[in-house]
Image 1: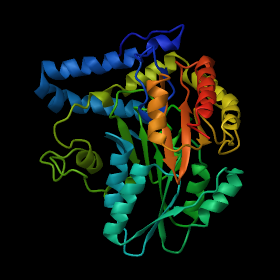
Image 2: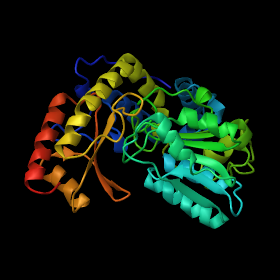
Image 3: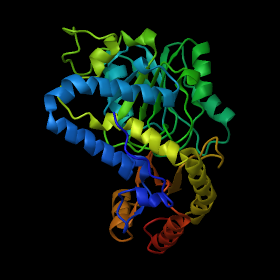
Image 4: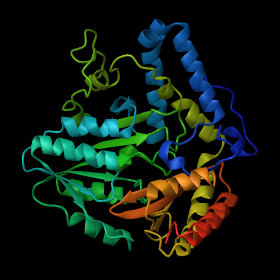
Amino acid sequence: MESSDNILYNNLKEAFLLREDITFLNFGSFGATPKPIFDAYQRFQQELEYEPVQFIINKGPQYLKESRVRLAEFLGCKADDLVYVPNPTYAVNIVARGLDLKPGDEVLSTNIEYGACDRTWEFYCAEKGAKYVKQEIKLPIESKEVFLADFWKGFSEKTRLVFISQITSATGLILPVKEICEEAKRRGLLVFVDGAHVPAHIHLNLTDLNADFYTGACHKWMMTPKGSSFLHVKPEHQQQLDPLVVSWGYKADFPGDSQFLDYHQFNGTRDFSAYLTIPEAIDFMKWNDWWGVAEDCRMLVQKWLPRLCELVGSKPLAPVTDEFIGQLGSIPTRCENPVELKQILYNEYKIEIPVMVQNNQVYIRYSINAFNSEDDLVKLEKVLVELKERKLIF
């Protein structure tokens, strides 16, 4: 795979294709792809169309392997323990379907998980006679120790698996998954970490974390094109995961070195060019000192979160430190119609920002990345004041 020429941008906002008339505070949902990465994406797509058969059958598998090797280096794991999937929800379905859960078994989670994953576990637990336990987490979180104590109250002798987000969606909180993995191992439990928001958001070393299963999105904070994510599975668990879509890799005519990859990597014809841009994304981040960029963004989120919460009469959901808050800030608020509020924010004020509901609580969640500036949060503050005056939030 050839990499495009690296470009060092004086202003990283110039690297992105986002509309200039929109204040984009919703990087957390689907990310946004910088021009060099998007150019690489289109080059792969063009190569695919120039010779589809050769690309899909011959070059594609080698490209995928090269991409997985680079991603594995970035994540601190072995390449053959990674498989590409379109999104983390797809990965959760693979594991939830493949686990040998028995009637009466329990999957321990929290009540602040991503809705699609909640639905996945509820579906497969119901099918297998198991129980999905959504342990209540008291918000705001007082400390890591209090969170862990609250979480483990959901444990019972029937618990078989822990499923937990490393960074939550609606509440935007970084959770202490390292400590949860360590305690789970002491209790003889499997652990599946949903790290959809983690890669390139906070540092991640999968070998050190030691979760049995881990899924993350590359199309969020790693900035690759949409539909590129991964599932990491420890070798001792790979054999039990059947393919979610049965295709040529099952009982393959020409099996590869890994049944795990055979079963899950190729599931029929699709354009997998987005997966192949991951090395380009890693190079882009390295070239532009991305961890320095992330630190600046995190500091901006943390600076403004108490102020914005106070403006709407609420408090941050956890101590405003690196331990809990990264590049996502969720503002608890109240409103009568969250869907309408989001439309007003976009249509009237040209702010792209999610208004999310979880456990009957409304959150306005802002994301900060390289293209944002403090002016964006000044604008959000002014808009929130006006929304209060209009009694659209209270």
